[in-house]
Length: 64
Image (tube, rainbow, N blue to C red; front, side, top):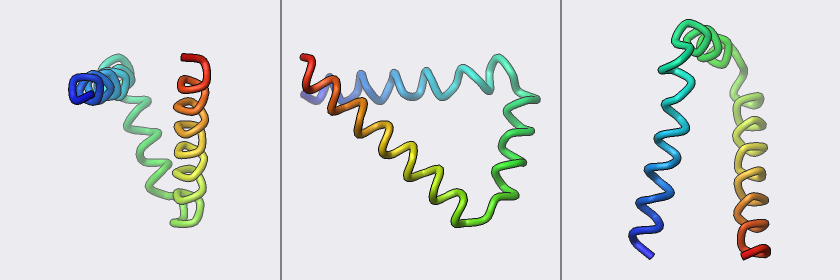
C-alpha cells in the first residue's frame, strides 16, 4: 500500500512538472492570471479539481 502511495505521488509530480518544463512562459502567464482571480473563483476551481479527482478514483475503484 505504501509503495502505491509513493507511486501515485511520483506520477503526480511528474505530470505537474511537464507543463512548466516544456512551456515556462505560458505557465508563468497562467499563474499570473490565476493570481488575479478572486478567492471565490479560486475555491470554485479547487472544488472542480477535487470533484474530478474523486470521480477518477471512484471510476478506477469500480472498474478494477
